[in-house]
Amino acid sequence: MAAKTIEEADRKARNIVNGWSAAATAVSWVPGSTLVLGMADMKMVNDVAKVYRVQSFNIEGVSAAIGGAVAGRGTLEATLVWFPIVGWGIKALIAGGVTKGVGEVVISYMRERSPLIAT
Image (cartoon, rainbow, N blue to C red; front, side, top):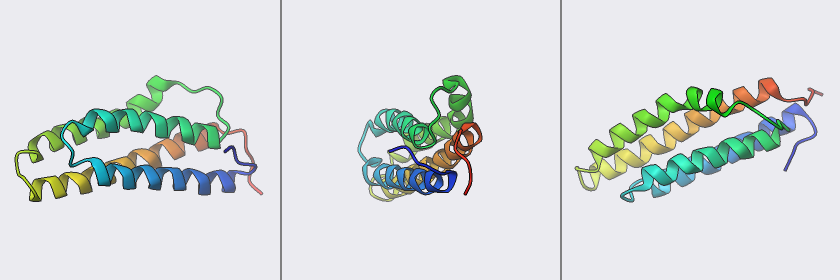
């Protein structure tokens, strides 16, 4: 899974983030999915770290970077669940967008700490 160059890591990391974003969009309409999506965000963080060969990182730093987005997603999704069909659709779009945003922050965070070099 680990990349050999920073450019390869960028491509692999974006594929990981895009996959998790699509998954969040697909399942976020399910009641209780916010908790599962939070755990999925942490899996995404670890997967991106592996791609960039970041052996250790400050989970508090990553959590602080993504915490506001995840908290905002949870609050908004809790409101939208009360509006069947339309609210669920909006909730799905928001979840996918927030996951993509979180992923981009994680990519930036891990890229800065990566031992990989550009070609």
